[in-house]
Length: 237
Image (tube, rainbow, N blue to C red; front, top):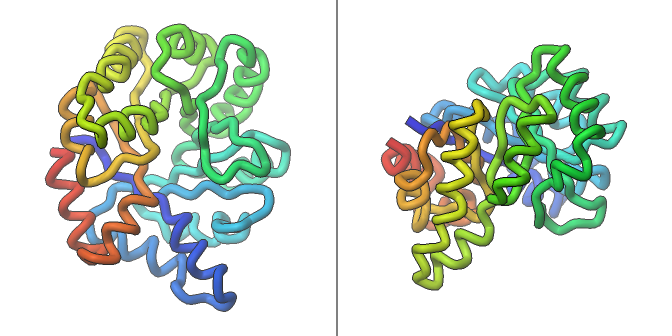
């Protein structure tokens, strides 16, 4: 079964919009695990506009499933990850002012940099994943960095699938097939939802984990968080 990791950034955004501590990020992380999620994801950014660096520290003892920390490996982020030692670090090349992640790594151009970062994390026993577009050359480049996994950036699939273009899955299937062949684990995330997750999962061989936040939280406004998590788990079987 593909694992569901719930990205809780949007919960922190809601909390920050009014100050104080409602909703409580730590309690939400505990609850999604209690409801069946097999992981918790956070993506702390330098401006701390949603998840704060201290949230990441505070969450570590509360995440009893898998803890995935995403971000651009600037020094402050690397120091945080090495301090917290999550289950997995996902390297994302987002700019400081990016609204959300909008591109995967060029693993060829940045091979030496990524290799150095990954070696540092792996020396501390942290599983590494690289956020990439479904481009075979970038998958091959990710393997050469020493990464354990890739995370497929799925925004283009989600957009086209919403328009009825199911053929948009093809490059993702090919990327997963190559990853399996060369020994890279396959994760995926960005704009996956209850509407498209089953089709995506059914067409991605060896899909280990999906990280879902924005859609899952939005769907929960109508359906309830516990119910939505169960709906995702059913689709990921």
